[in-house]
Amino acid sequence: MKHGTKSKQPRKPNPTPVEEARYQKRKMAIDSVRQGEKPTVVARVFKVPQRTLFYWLELYRHGGYDALREGKRSGRPRKVNASVLQWLYKAITLGDPQQYQFDFCLWTLGIVRTMLKRFQGIELSKSGVSRLLHHLGLSPQIPKYKSYKQDPRKMRRYLQQTFPEVVREARRTGAVIYFVDEAAVRADAHRGTTWAPVGETPVVEDSGDRFGLRLISAVSPRGDLKFAAFEGRMTSQRFVAFLKKLRADTGKPIIVIADNASYHKDGAVKCYLRPTPEGIRVEHLPTYSPELNPDEQVWNHLKGRLGKLFIESKEQMKQATKRILLSIQRSVNLVLSFFQLKDTQYAANAS
Image 1 (cartoon, rainbow, N blue to C red):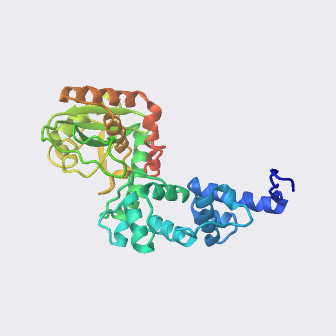
Image 2 (image 1 turned 120 degrees about the horizontal axis):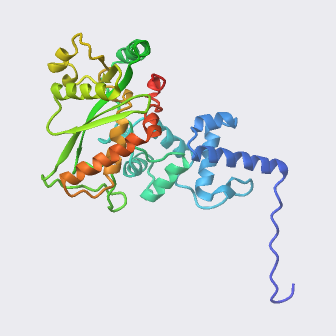
Image 3 (image 1 turned 135 degrees about the horizontal axis):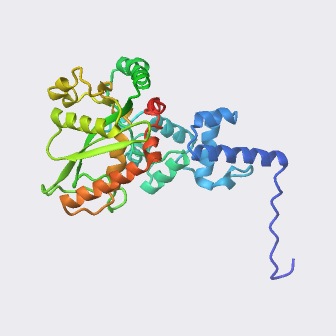
């Protein structure tokens, strides 16, 4: 070899068709998990044991797609191997932190990081934990809360008997079905985000000078939204006044479905709903079942949008609230989408 010339590195042979097919299979399996498919489903579809799938995830986590190719794989020992990945995925998807002696019930990066150190002796940064969870097809999401006091029998009775009977009566009498709910919005209870150090939950101190607004609204499977604002607490008299206005605006008989708050049943409501020519009927959701009420989504949208605004006064809050509710009211497709959630689809075709 002449002085000064560089020796040529041996070229890595191209993968055979069989090796390339195996690589593509691994790559597709990894992509499926990262896009949110359950590893149990992916393993079954690709006909591999779950431990093999998690081994592929281990390779991908430390070397990207190239690490999935066949050949010599070297490097320092990995902190997070396939068995740890499988253990962590099961822990997060099949339970909550309280089962691991944590007081908090939500999986946060801090809790996952602490759990890895406590139970596996593995220490990762929060950014490392975030990447790991994304590789497992997990993502941060706002949880849906469900009361432990729910009665499954009452839920079934409502879905299989009460509501179908309401739909039959509505079609027989030409009535419009409305779901009704109340809410309060406050200046110190926005649901938006605020800048803070990464990984540290910010604490907003309450000055005590808060102000708010109380609201009632009704939505129908036709895409209607009616709403009103009021001062003070909700009472049976205010509920009756809203029913009268709703009936007048609709121009047809109405069947209202509300929760089991006392002001939906007692006092003036009970007197008003005795046989009258008003054409109004009130039914009730099962107790502790707000997810069955499509009207809940009105408040989710309202509070989410209010949380992004800078509001200095109660009057400004009133104006912003009215503006947002009017925009929801004008968007029939948005209101209809409130009836397309998993727990509200039962009412979608009731118009």
